[in-house]
Image (cartoon, rainbow, N blue to C red; front, side):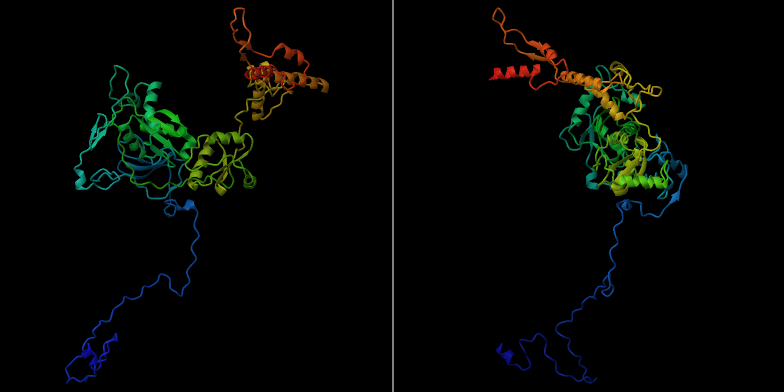
Length: 547
């Protein structure tokens, strides 16, 4: 190092090479300058920013309504349609009818739809996508299963179905045998629905079939789209392993469970043997055979929903625009009768709305937290089932008007005032109230309360209407004493402490009704003091014995 340090022109602390001596640039020199010891790095050019630094960024767009985020909402495709075939390819066609958009395939038992239970009753006005069949074309090399083909290493795994009880062998799955059958009977080959179902099940057979499914999660979940086409294959796959398929319904379809049950039995061919809330149990039939079952093609995508008429009109049925606006203003201060939970069970909603219309011409249902498409479907169902007139969906609430043609469901329960209590008990629905001027028509709820009060001896009907105040007060006092006697009277069994001649304890004494002392003391209509009833005396004797 001392030798290197003594050399001229060398600096040990310099990071750059020393300046080379000047050389002649003439051609006679013939020597090119040496390259630098460290190559100059080459950096990539700077990235171009999406927004130039000089240009200010645009403010973010406000989020649109959740209802506009649904599929096919932003599509500009719009084609008006009429009833009939709108697209045809041989025997395969797309048809528009009373049940909406349906698809016809050769050899199919019925017209296929995306949803069999949640199709609106109104006819569609237009479609949002070209009329294509959502099924696999007939030229596909293999049936569509919704999955990619298996790898070669997994294709060699054999899968067997066995009627024997489930074993611990890989690749063997249990298949449920036909049945149950009565003693001495065997399975038959059935073609029609009645032949496949066989004889009706008995109560003990229904309990035996349902019991394994009560606490199991092996089920078909039915949501806002209702009973869809691909669920047909799911139900048959459940029937392959079990005789009963459990279906759990939640959300919009539970408003009309009768329609869901009808569609399930009609399309699957089974029989609903038990129903609890939104849970259904479908029996496949005694003579069901999985190999001879109907096989349906799977839908490869969800078709776009057609365009239907608007549910909310500016001038609804039987109203002008000014009257509709007035009812909407009144509905703003109206309290909702209930709040619907998301993915809930709304079995009693139609009944609650009908009962609410008995007391108010306007009814509101709170739907906060639900999807806009959900409470619009619920409103469409209520419009048909109640029936009623929809006014608005503002603030995630359904506002309904009962309409001008509304009729009370208790309209025949009018009670004439000039009939006796005996006649009322025999004919509670007497309707001779038009010709008699002494009759008064009250509200249905009040009439039901009056009837219940008379049955429990808490109310009575006066046959004489022209009474002076003194006579009326006397009758009221008499009725008050009788009603208290009836209210505090019941059968009581008391163990007696008397002994017979042989020294044995006597049997139980039966205190059936109010004794004679009560009739003597309070026969003039005086109020009953506390602790003077026979029941109070019996209780006091029991307390003394316990001490």
